[in-house]
Length: 172
Image (tube, rainbow, N blue to C red):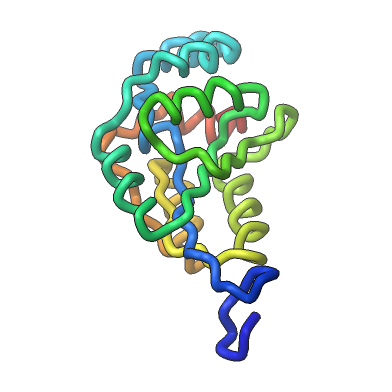
């Protein structure tokens, strides 16, 4: 920290603020693969394998590209670590920055809100979080209650199937 209390890197430079962005429901349209989760038990392997065919959500893509001009983009997704390569390739194919991608460990079954809260706290130890963008109402509410600057990505209707996967089963 410098005399003004701002974080500085090892060279004494104040890094750019961070925009923390969710993937599914913010820049990636997951609706075509929700059917894999409506069956019992859910077919998680097929659900994540189909993510490579997600159509981009123009509102989210435009928002991220605009934020990237003034912020470092950190992706914070509930997708499991085993889907990292597919997720990175998809983001690159959309022309989105992929400097930092934080994913849920494969064996982590915490709810999305609990996982993301912990990751944000960890990130905030070294960086200034300027905005968090997420589509999950439970995540948005918790993070707002914690005092984070949150933008609710509401351009895609939020489905109970996804809520159950994120909050109850801790899978995405």
